[in-house]
Image (cartoon, rainbow, N blue to C red; front, side, top):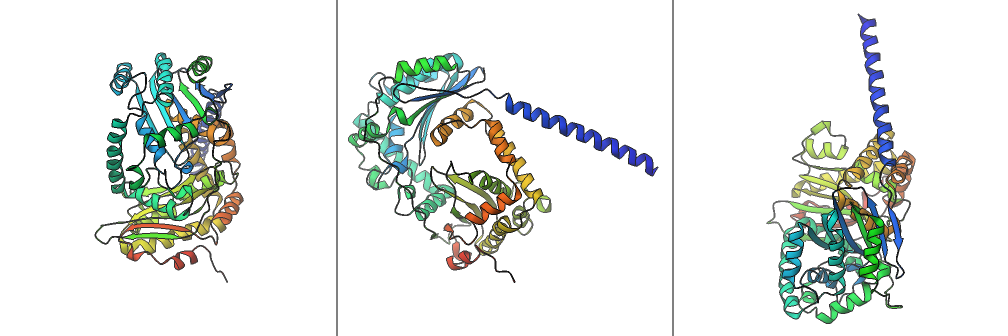
Length: 467
């Protein structure tokens, strides 16, 4: 019986190996068979980048190298204000005409502003791409910026600011940037202060467009059922009038990182929201991939997931079994030349200290004793997440636009996969030691923060003393 059982077990193992090999081969083929990203640069410097998957739908958008980081203390909030004004009518169409046109197409028109980019995009049927491109060209070149609409949007933005203030995660991350990059443009909020919103004028908006909406800083991105040559032709037709104004593009000032903290104590709140981070790497820094692996290894968890002792993450086991936190998520926020790498968690006041001890212990393990199995698990999860995040024409279009601005090219999926695969245990240890070990962290906390240790104790947790 023992021999039979052994034989059956051997056959079963061989079957598992065959299935794993087949899965691996299929995965590699899938990476190679991804449609290529094609790039054309127009005479005025505007870049057109596409990935044609032959889908029935498409997403096209304009990614502009301009965000709140390019503002100063006097006009902070103007980029976001301009995003709001884009859909309020142009010299060719009223707001009603624009909305009816988009609705009759069955399309979706949207926009957002970040600290380094402003984005306008449309999702539509593949046959409607020419109309979508014409609309996008119209709203960034011919926006009417009518005074009544400016006043109306001023009120909308002020109400939006109140909504953001009720989103404690947004509040904590704004505080985190404000203290980490204090005195620099990255420390500013995207929406801007209330006093600025109340006085931004039509002249401010026009000046921002003239300064930043230049073709050399714009990428027209397309994904899904998008023919590259046709999109290039549309770009030449609708964007050839855009000209670069020499000498007026402001240089991107380096943003100084300062290890520091900010606490907004409010004991009437049931839970505290805390973020702790160190200075991370910029988009083009070679250390970014190992930091992404380390970030994935720390992971995320909340009470709805459960898991208990079966969680792969040590931190998730501590949070769930000991009840030290309601949720946590590790983050790796990148900018052109810097970043923030850390963790955000929500917990009760008297448990903040205990959970933070576990967090810093896990960080020190990354620097000194992370294992091969942990790194392999994190790399597999990172690759899975990478593919899941590119499921759909809009995420692909966004990935193309963002990468063109950050890297001046789209990194092929198989190349990114290979770069993740090449990360070794020693790479993770070395890079984490460089960014985490004995580094001054930045801390932002809102709520009943009494249980959070003082900054000197938090700073002391960034290294280990061993006999």
